Length: 232
Ligand SMILES: Cc1cc2nc3c(=O)[nH]c(=O)nc-3n(C[C@H](O)[C@H](O)[C@H](O)COP(=O)(O)O)c2cc1C
Image (tube, rainbow, N blue to C red; front, top):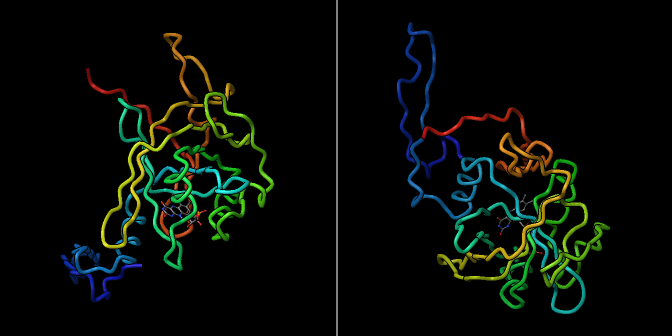
């Protein structure tokens, strides 16, 4: 957690504690990221880029079984071709995370969007298991065939994307992996699909009920949904 007392932060202390002006104390932090360690930058990013969607990623292990892990450095980044991005670091011992190895070596992966009831399983799947051990089996999750995909999907998830590695780059001195995946198939549970006033199919966001990631160990779920049409 970054604090005003943190020597690495450049602080702008504005209008602080004006006695006789209501006693309000406003402290603004203006942080020079070049002065932070990589861990501090991580802390600053994950507490301010909010909420982040969570990709629950299934890949195939080298021998048998499937690997499963969550990633919130994740988003949709292009429609033509349809691309998503993941950013994957290393294990505490410095070796590549299993998801990263599996995608680099076997190309195919399936991203699931988990709903509220799955938040604990999502977190449990982030445990660092020895390479080759399957979080899918460990958590007792069922898989089903995913038409058009070489890999199955988790039966319990309402939305899944079948992806193929499109581009793999390593970023920065710690070689963080930036993975672009081309989405070949999108699965949406029938129960989520409704029609708008013009009869077009729409995905019911509230029924989808995805979890979003905040800083630390926090998640967020939908509260109020705002519908603000764009100007023509
Ligand atoms: C909600 C959540 C989001 C996460 N996001 C990321 C991420 O974006 N990048 C990353 O490298 N690790 C992330 N992690 C940590 C990985 O899930 C964790 O290192 C996991 O053990 C990797 O598994 P693997 O070695 O089987 O690929 C996240 C963990 C949680 C619980």
